Image (cartoon, rainbow, N blue to C red; front, side, top):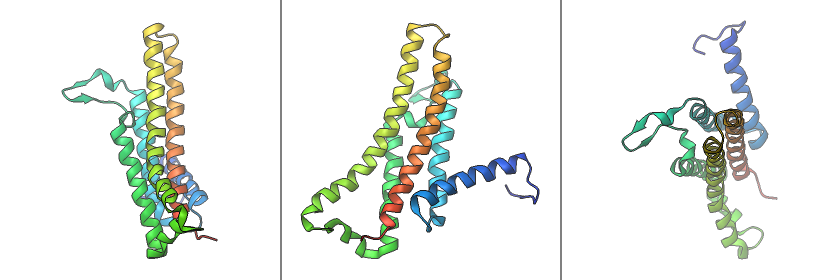
Length: 190
């Protein structure tokens, strides 16, 4: 990455593919002004993807710590809430930077009666993101724990591989929804 080649090597091809994928997700959801948001969306995607895969592939739970365990960070509600709040801050920042204080006019559109509902909608977005990510990762881990307790290693191992697929999908969903929310805050009202 530090020394890009005209004829890329395997490593450079991989990193260019990942960057192109993240750019595509950002451009699809945000629109033509996606450029400044690629690092944010990419960071969210890569953090969730890599951390969930490392938690699913490596048996970190074997290592006991005094105040916790090494595992996928998204199986902790605090981590998912923090990621959702970061997305919420980015959502408001995008709207305010694009429209200034006129951004808050969307809360009284089309009628001021909808003000409480529009405010409630903005507060439920991070909550929804957080619970969606936490719930799916937790459900995957619970299925594996139950299968391990009921059946020896024959059945749980293929289910663990399904967990890898689920982890990747969760990273994609979170990044896509974060980009969609940011795009929504930047779009004009008709």
